[in-house]
Length: 303
Image 1 (cartoon, helix red, strand yellow):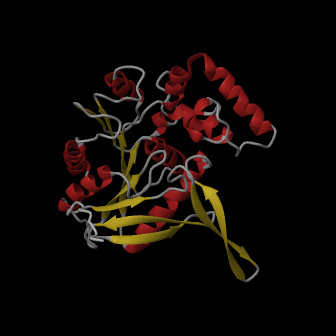
Image 2 (cartoon, one colour; image 1 turned 45 degrees about the horizontal axis):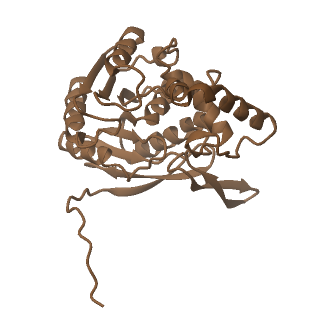
Image 3 (spheres, helix red, strand yellow; image 1 turned 180 degrees about the horizontal axis):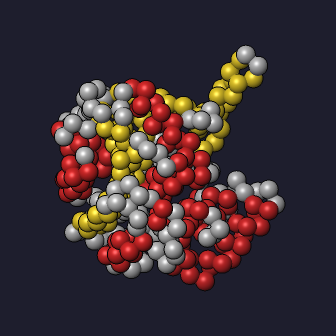
């Protein structure tokens, strides 16, 4: 039988697959590209269900950034993909034991993203980078904002927020009358010790605990970009910030300009800039190069 060869895109990015360790013992991976002589590295953090390689946006940005002399590291968090194995290395006496756990977006604990990003920063610093720009897409925006809020990392030169959507209010809008009952179900499950279980009533194949993270304002993840709220964590960020939305953002409950105006009003950043990509959706599909041009232009400004 004659085999048919699949044709793949010919564009190639050269770089290095990097394994890095988190403070709490997990091993994660990412892809590092750019010149070894670069002193500033952009760290790209994916959103829900994402990973370091499955989305074209970071690689389009990395190509543009490398031409300007930046390093680029697209990293996995422990919340990569929907459900995925993650590996924890526990030390017991003189031995190290490798433990396989179930992770991914459905089961991650949002607050632990600090361990993931800190591990990436530490590894990249050991490689030779001295300054970092954190670039998040979707929930990656919440993660990099929370990281900088908690750590006040002096090596972070700026934050790039690509589609920092409001998960809390979008969930309320999408579920309508069912929203309260779903949240109450999740609360009951957590109290019963079933927080890591899923139910068909819970959207997105989230575990009960994970869903509460975006649906309960007592949880920090739900508050970070709750545009009806005080944006307390975001307003503590003082490094330069660049926020970008697509004009056709499908996870928005209002015109995206209102989101950006709210960020502008609440920021304490020494420099806040914003842009709207005309025709762009949440993933900036077919507009990746437009995002890359704006990102590189902004990087030159804060360099």
